[in-house]
Length: 122
Image 1 (spheres, rainbow, N blue to C red):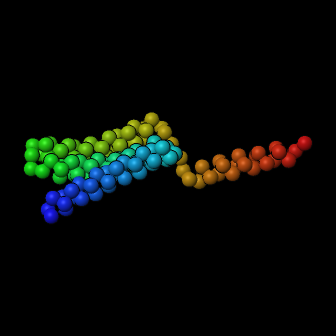
Image 2: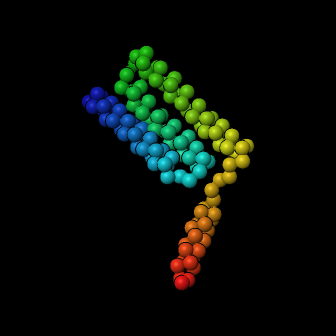
Image 3: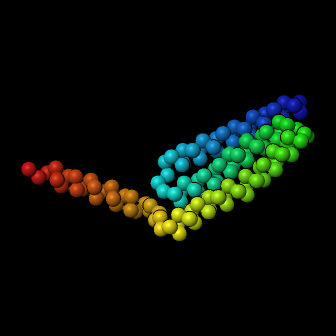
C-alpha cells in the first residue's frame, strides 16, 4: 500500500515537473522580450526542476542520492531566480526597452492601415 502511494507520488511530481518545464519552453518561445522571457524562465523552470527533483529524491528514498538531490534542489531555488534577475538588470542597464502591449498593438494597426492606404491607390 505504501509503495503504491509512493509510486504515484513520484509519477505526479515528475508529471508536474514536465508540465512546468513545457510551459516555460512555450513561454520562452512566444514571449516578446528579454524581461518577459526571464520572468517565465525563472518561475516555471524553478518549479519544473523543483517538482522533478522532489520526485527523484522520493524515488531514491533514504539514501545519499536523495540528500544530494535535495541540495541540488536548494541550489536551483537560489540560483535560477538570481540569474534571471541579473540578466534582466543587465538588459535594463544596457538600455534594452521592454516591448509594451500598447506599442505592439499600435504598430500592427499602423502597418495594416498603411498597407490598405497604398493598396487603394492606382
